[in-house]
Amino acid sequence: MTETPTTHARTRSAELFGRAQALLPGGVSSPVRAFKAVGGTPVFFASGKGGEAFDEDCNRYVDYCMSWGPLALGHAHPAVVKAVQETAAKGTSFGTPTAEEVGLAELVTQLNPRAERVRFVSSGTEAVMSAVRVARGYTGRDLVVKFDGCYHGHADYLLVKAGSGLATAGQPDSAGVPASMTSTTIVLPLDDERAVSDFFAQRGREVAAVIVEPVPANCGLLVQRAEFLQHLRAECTQAGALLIYDEVISGFRLGPEGAAGLLGGEPDLMTYGKVIGGGLPVGAYAGRREVMEVVAPLGPVYQAGTLSGNPVAMAAGCAALTALRDGGWERLEQNAQALEAALLPVLADYPVELVRVGSIFWLSFQQPAPRSWGAIERSGAERYKVLHRELLERGIYLAPSAYEVFFVSAAHTPAHFAETAAAFAAALPIAFGASS
Ligand SMILES: *Cc1c(COP(=O)(O)O)cnc(C)c1O
Image (tube, rainbow, N blue to C red):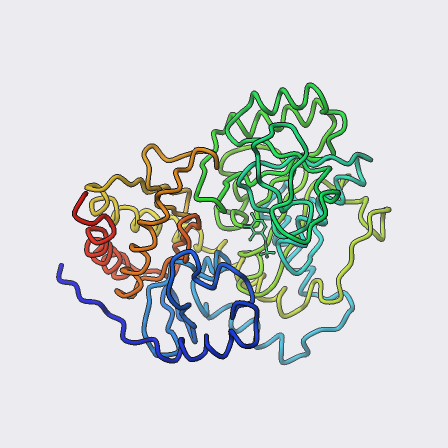
């Protein structure tokens, strides 16, 4: 496999980033896009098709960031583009119920029977905030248990991950969050049934909800044992608390029933984002009818949105979920296996482990791969920085952080996987220096 760097100068990206920095804090609309974790200048993508994206300087990349997860079908999937164009031409928002939201709700509830009722919102963050409010309203309790390393969007009371003090109220991770906002958030370690039991033995009756990413994919990919998830279900049931699966990444990516279908587990509520909108801003929360019926206008839990259920976004979601149902998920799994098969021989000589759950991948710089945030050795980040840069120069785009996962789409091809393997083969010796 001969290999030469495929990209040329990113002059326009650099120029745009200069302008952006004078206008947007850090030059971005979301912090991790700024490349601070890997160094260098962010790449400004201008277009994409299938598994490839093109930057403002016309460099081509095989894209494994895929907008951080939404694009399970790849860029500019024809059915999604058509749905957006046709729906937008009829008007972009009405503030009334529309046929499109009924269509997406039918798909969601048919694909995943755990979703008996669904409410659409505009982001994953909103979906999680609302689901937690529902759980609190339904149970009449305040405490929310989350796990160290799990990300649930940027709601004040969930911006906590410091799990040092077991079973103590969390400290905020972000400035601007009063300690009082996180005083009802309890942070426990993943992969630790004992810690959960100990906490529930003391305060289980105060818990409104346990929220977990069933496939934690925002701090590396911390694959949980099915027993751990079953344990959460059992403790919640016993204490009268609700179990929320945050499926914002995993929902409709890991098949019709998401992580719950793949790993088992019976959450009371699920939150969605990313894939459900086919690349447009959509979130949703869904679950048991009895629980969801506390939401206004049926019940006392208020939650609303001017652009919620936006018809253009709903149409994109319908087109995406329909294409996934009609062969997309099979293709996604085939592609994930093909990428894994291409990378494993190349990675074999290095002290890394390729972690994969369906089409979600992560490169762990320690073996065996960790299952909790506390178990991650931070030294991997330095190697990732070099690896990321070298892959970028070879036209392979991974998320710009060692702790972010990467995604294959249904639109990637065998040629992409061969190209990716060749780029890794060239980049790994540089990332590991002579010492490997
Ligand atoms: C991305 C993500 C969120 C937040 O979704 P946004 O659409 O970015 O607000 C919440 N939970 C999980 C698990 C996520 O991956």
